Each structure stands twice: as C-alpha cells, then as structure tokens.
Image (cartoon, rainbow over all chains, first blue to last red; front, side):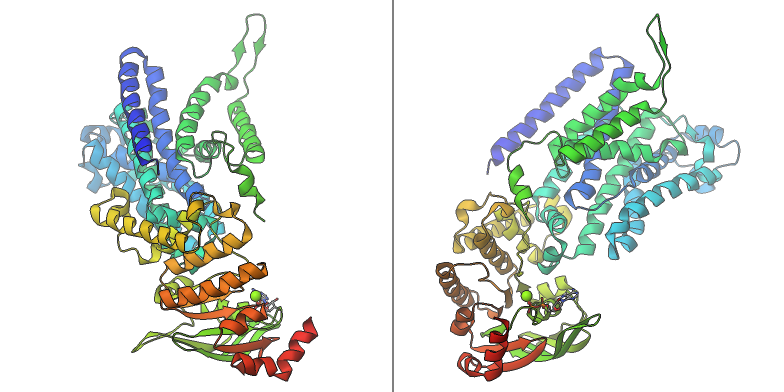
Length: 339
Length: 256
Ligand SMILES: Nc1ncnc2c1ncn2[C@@H]1O[C@H](COP(=O)(O)OP(=O)(O)O)[C@@H](O)[C@H]1O
Ligand SMILES: [Mg+2]
C-alpha cells in the first residue's frame, strides 16, 4: 500500500514535533509548557484507552486507578530518601521502600509493569466470564485503589499524599513517551495481534471460530493498556510533584474517555489530535468554573461547569457522530448499511 | 475424519437435535439436509464448540494415530485442530478490509509472539509477508483480489459468502464445515459454487461437511447425505438412496 507515504508522514510529524518543542521550551512560559506536557500525557492515556475500548471493543473505566498506581510507584521510587522521611512524619514509611531511590526511566517502567500486573489481576476473572462487567469491575477497581491508598499510611502516606516528587517530567519525556505509545499502538494494530483484537471487536463468535483465543487476546490488550496508563500516571506525578489519592477520581477517567470518543474509537491520529484539543480546551474553559468579573457585573462561577460542557459535547458526539469528530465521512454508509 | 455419536442438544425444552450419529470420512463431501429448524446448524455449533452438547461424543481424527474428543474443547482449540466453518448468516469482520478478513484467518497459525510483531523483528516480518501472499492468493482464488481494500460489509451478499470461505481456508483446516453456502445465490452462482467447492477440496486436500437447502447442490457433490427432521435423523445414504426415501420426501413436502 502507501507504506512509504505513511512512513514519510510519520517522520514529518516527529521532526515537526521536535522542532515545535524546541521553540516552545525557548519562548513559552511555564504555564504553557505545563499544558504541552499534559497534552503529551493525555496522548498516551487516550491511546491506551483506545486500545481496549476502541480496538478490542471492551469497555474499561479503570484508567484513574492505573494512573494512581503508576503515579505512586514513580513518586515513591524517585523521591530522595530524606524527602521521604519528611513526607512520612505521621507514620514512618515501610522499611523496604525507605532507602530506595532510582532513576526516572526505570521508575516509569516499574510503574507500567506493576500497573499491567494489576490490570491482569483484575481483568482476568472478568474477561474469562462476561466482559460486559469489565466497566463495572474496573470502575470499582479505580475507587478501591483510591480508598486503599488513602488508608495505607505507611505505604502511600494516606490522605496526606506525597510532596516533593522530583520534577523529571519535561516536554521531552511527556512527548517522548507519547511517541513511543503512538509507535507501539500503530505497529501493534498493523500486525497480526492487533488485527486479532479488531476481529474480536467485530465479531467474537467468528473470531473464536477462526482460532483466536478470546481470553488471551483480551487480557493481552488490557495489560498493554494498563501498562501505558501506569506510565502516564508516573509522568503526571513527576510533572506535578505533589499527588494525593483524591486526584485520581472518576472524572480523570472521564476526561480520557472524552478524548477517545472525540478522536474516534479505533483511530490513532484522531486520538492524538483530540488529546491535545481537549487538554487545551480544559485549560481554556477554566474560566467557566471561576467567577467572572465583567467590571459592571460579577458573574458567579459554577464549579464543575466545565465538566457539564464536556459532558454535553460527549453526548452530542455519541449521538451524532459515533466514529469521532476527526474522521472522514468515506465509507460511512457502508458501515451502517449492515443489518 | 469425524465421528459423531449419539449427539443430543437441548435448549431448555427445545430438543434441537436428538441422538444424532454420523460419520464423515477423509476426503469425502458429506451433506446434511433437512427442513428449516431441523437442527442442522445446531450440529455445526456443537462440533465447533459453540455449544456443549447435552449428551453424546464427537471424535476428530485429523491424521493417523491422532484422535481428539471435541466435546468440552473451546471453539478456538477446535479451530486449531483443523476444523473451520462458515456461518449461515455470514459473520465477517464487517468494518475491516476484505484482505484483513483473510489475514486474520491466518492468525491461529502465527508462531511469533506479540512483542516481535510490534518490533517487527525479521522472523515476524517474514511470517507476515507469507501471510499476505497467501491471503492474496486466496482472494484471487475467490475472485475478490480487486476488492481487497474494500470494507467487508460493503460487499454484495454473494461475495461475502465467498470471502467467508477464503477466511476459513486461511486457517488451514482439514475439515471444512459449510453452512448453506448457496443460500441467496442465483442458479448461475450456485453452479459456480459447486465447482468451486470441488476445486478447493482437491487443492487443499479437504474433507467437507455441508449443510445445504438447495437439493441440486447437495445431490450433485455429496457422496453421502444425512437427513435431519425435527432433530431426528430420518435417513442416510447415497444421494440416490436418500432421494427415493419416502420419509425424506414427506418431510420436504410437508414443509414446502
Ligand atoms: N441458542 C439456541 N437457543 C434456543 N434454541 C435454539 C438455539 N439454537 C437453535 N435453537 C433451536 O433449535 C432448533 C434447530 O435450529 P437450527 O439448528 O438452527 O436449525 P436449522 O439449521 O436446521 O435450520 C430450532 O427450533 C431453534 O429454534
Ligand atoms: Mg441453519
């Protein structure tokens, strides 16, 4: 096919991004750089969720939980030893973590692996039986993680959270990981395993009759997705420097879901664009939550207004354009002509 | 190749198939006929592991000195052993391309693991190239090479049926189960299909078990025919024997 053209476009995008990041780091202020970082992290998160929800056709809502796992892993593994002592003044940290301090990359990898392991642990029983329940199970998992992290004082410092996590995350890390994720998901999807995932999405009975082990492939897809969600959580922790269990609420998962739905289920480019757009919009629309002073009149802000707007967008997209906002219309009739 | 012994399948109160026994020998084309709702598709569903039978056993004998009890195995295991099927109401991967549909049929024979597929290490790249070549060959065989990049669901019905067959062939089956392959086809297409079935049987060294509503098709290509009515075997034998059987005539006239 147009293999060459695709490779050239990918390279172009890569070079373009590198250039843009250089310029951004040079000329933009910290606030804007932070949005760029968040965009990169949301690209990873969006693709991770799209892998399960879009390509494999499962419905998972556990991203906040996997991010929490990744964030705490990176926080605890990269924090300098004296800083840990300061953080855990209420109750000392468990001894096996007290004297650990590792580099950012190994910490991110560990974060991804622990997250993937937990993903398999909760995914396996559900995926073996009825994957209709995956959404509920993962949602429950995310809430449980939050409650557990609030209460394991000597492991996570409970509700106090972690402060002083070293800020390793910069635009190179956030977008570097984003590009690795784009590359990984694209190649996965183009290969035989990715096509098997999509076959499962299209028709489980037919996929199984063609010799595809449903359980094994679903767990595989779920493990990859959890891995990247964990890594993204780690990036976020290192970007913010401060984390606590309440950051990882369902609204976080909801943001990612919004990206996936806007970008189009099973669309890579769409997801990347949507991730950037949604992140920027989320900041741009922040004024909705705050009170606005127009000089002559003071409008009281309604907290959560942004979320309402986003929910409405989400509903509209689901109702009007299920294949996402950023996809061409070609072949649309065909997909719906089917009985 | 395949031996079905005393197969009974009940769905709640409905007995879809009762004490059905049959044998399909290596290299044969065997027909399974009967009026609508007779339980034919159910027999296929049980063979391929979609349903676990209420009673009975199924033995698959793909080569000398190798026998598998199919009851209790999952559909993907059964496919890997070498039994593949088409569906009465086609079940293609609708949103995927025609070529990808056939490509996916090869997945169960893939040796590379998932990471080598993402990293595209040479051994995987070679496997994938072979899969593409084989898939294109199969598409050419069914005359769909010019449609390879079309969405499977956009194909007309007759083509979808052929595509299902190509996808099934990609799994390299020893035994191919065809569920009403001529359904919805005109006489011309039906004749082509009959030739096609015989052709692939020779080329891929297949054994074929075939459900068909069109009597002409079954009568022409089957060496042996089983007739089901209300889940019960009412006749078996060569096409001419079955054709003369009073019960068969009655069952068909009764319906039609
Ligand atoms: N999954 C099922 N649940 C309940 N009843 C079924 C199921 N599958 C088939 N049946 C019933 O079994 C009988 C035989 O169906 P089927 O095997 O599809 O017949 P045929 O293929 O010969 O037309 C029918 O009465 C049908 O309603
Ligand atoms: Mg049927």
